[in-house]
Length: 436
Ligand SMILES: C[S@@+](CC[C@H](N)C(=O)[O-])C[C@H]1O[C@@H](n2cnc3c(N)ncnc32)[C@H](O)[C@@H]1O
Image 1 (cartoon, rainbow, N blue to C red):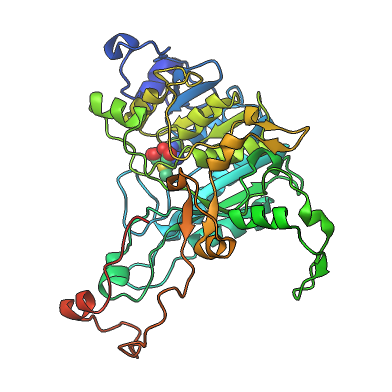
Image 2: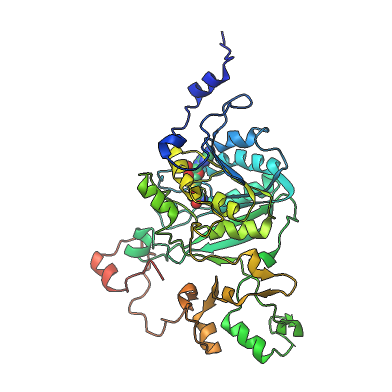
């Protein structure tokens, strides 16, 4: 005989142990920490742990939360901004699913995301690539994920982005450092998907400073002509709009080392999340794809970077994270009101809306020192001095700068199948660097 549970609170604690999150008194903070909430629907849903003016943090399986219609109404979400556990070959401590199983596992989430999004809403997924086990080739799992979401669930690929992290370490060591047959993998794909071909968006929210060469071009003037590529470059290119449209390559170093979040984790003996993305990444998409007051959801919230960015930008937000210890750390982001000047910083900070005046299309000059991408070539041809705060700019070395020497050795015919001796791999090439 099937025993029916009438006491839902007991049912909840048996089948879904309550996350062990400290109470307000234990933590001695000013947070509003909520430790109990009656589960809705058939099964228990994640617990509401924290609530701010704009957002909520839940702890538990986000699929249950997202399917609980009382928590999030279908069609009510403007942006799902997330970085799911990656299908890494080697399991990481936060419970990644094996690459082969990944797409299957994600499908349930994909369907649920689709139902929750508004018709002009967006789903942005930051997802890193993976290597096939034991061989120097790449898994296709993140492309398969994209195809599944579009072909089987009905999402549209609004645009693919690439997040380049210049500070990424050269891994996997075997292929990159030892055999030297691959280069370092420093780019994550970021799939911007939408429910319809027309998600709401404006790149005016995420403009960036002109490169010095573009500035010079604007000063000297550009002669309208048909380019060899067939592009007809008109006089309109001479118009100084005050800032330029960013490319879909986002150069953001993930180098947070002394943030309020990390200090909080250290002080409270909580493990810092090992796979955080920089605040500027969700900030870019929240700005471009949502308005103040819109609802942003991160179902794989980790340390709640998305929530922090959304709170600062005055969007409503919901973050859900499986692991109680990560939620514990996430609370550190909200110890100090994020609107105050003491907000958590991660380099580099982007322009705020207040810095941009849409009527004149001009950025205030201080923004010129902000996020920018420029090449050595651009700088050389423009013959410009980098501004004093040039440490805030990324330099992208042009491929070929070091190609003036005759190769000492022919390429290995076996593609590196035979492992070189340590002497060979160390002595014949310069040390690769982790940080630019
Ligand atoms: C790549 S991390 C996200 C990191 C986050 N973007 C940050 O910057 O801190 C993925 C997170 O998803 C969480 N996770 C995995 N499965 C989950 C689920 N079913 N519900 C909620 N969270 C889940 C993992 O515990 C992990 O913390």
